[in-house]
Length: 269
Image (cartoon, rainbow, N blue to C red; front, side, top):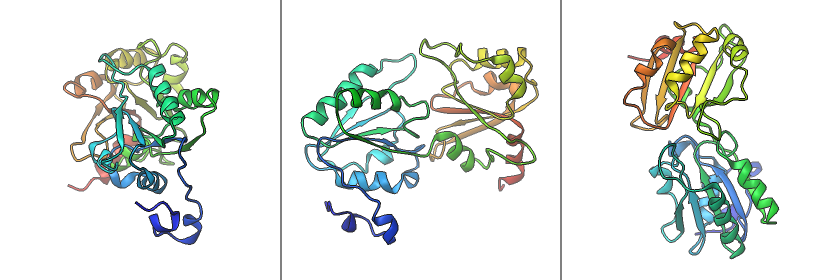
């Protein structure tokens, strides 16, 4: 495959000049987007083209098969997925793998679903790489919430509905609902709430939000496999969230707020 940026992609000169050479011994932490392969960045596409025999891709559970099919066949692939309640790779082992492979002189592409820094532990891995003096670069990616909601015709913001959006994780490092959140203030002031990884605790989460002042009748949406052909979109009311989530499996984005109502007016039938 070509290694000269001018040969890899035909882009307008300003964009072409910004492409970087993926040097051996480097780790690139890349966001693979929400799943649709047309949503990967040009930076990531270019990085994939630079991988050679002997290089390595370390990928997460949320990286879609379509995106993995873009990895050259001769490149080593290592699965490092994490799934709540199921056997998963240890974070320390993942970081060690990145360090060792880079120190062996390989190009190491760390593929993460969505964006590396939005509830994806990219910051933890970057700190480990820095401590080991391994050179790295971060390639941002589209996160599942904004991309998935856009595909579902749910505006993340609309000036007649909200002036803010709050992104949260459904659990902390213990696997329980995050304990460092001021739930009463959040429930009563946040205009639109978007939860990642909230499927397992959704019943407890919705009970807590209603208890702390969130309206039980507030519109919600649940998006499973956002942007993919088998995407499932369910809309309803906050009080029914746990019932609506029955039968769903990760990854699921959970959004609460009046912007969900706009989907009915924006979706073609």
